[in-house]
Length: 187
Image (tube, rainbow, N blue to C red; front, top):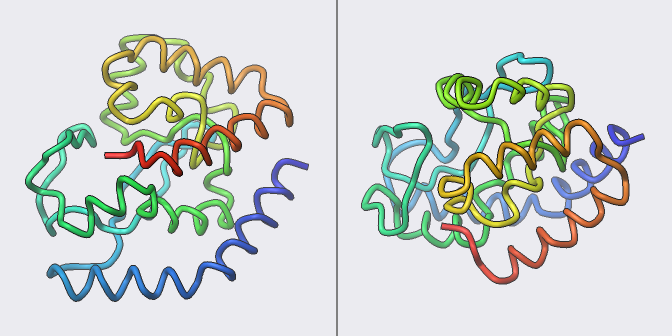
């Protein structure tokens, strides 16, 4: 049932927001050289790797260490700051949802090097792979920087979701995600 809801919501959102996708793509292309999207390998469902899609928010070929971007990072473009603060950079992940690589709600997929680090820090982290990774989840609700400062608590939240999620939990996370987006709490 969750997969059906994911596919239905992703398809509807992709259709409804396609004009916004086009506008964002044009603005990115007009304001900085390089591709419109940023693609990166991530660890997902059952430990399999997949390529995640995002709108590019940083200078092309700027390099990223452990996927960490701090406030004031000079690699972030002007339009990238806006896209990150509103989470519009995440919209292409609806394609990942349609492809079955992600869910709307679940543990955040990490790059392989980050996954290795998290596994070393907390071996039960592999339990997160029992479910499809999500565009949003318990760990992301408090913000990208909170996850860095409270890594063990974030890992515990992700594992907890993977081991005991319910439709009620998903709707609560979705509601709280909407509040985070409206408050522009991204970086």
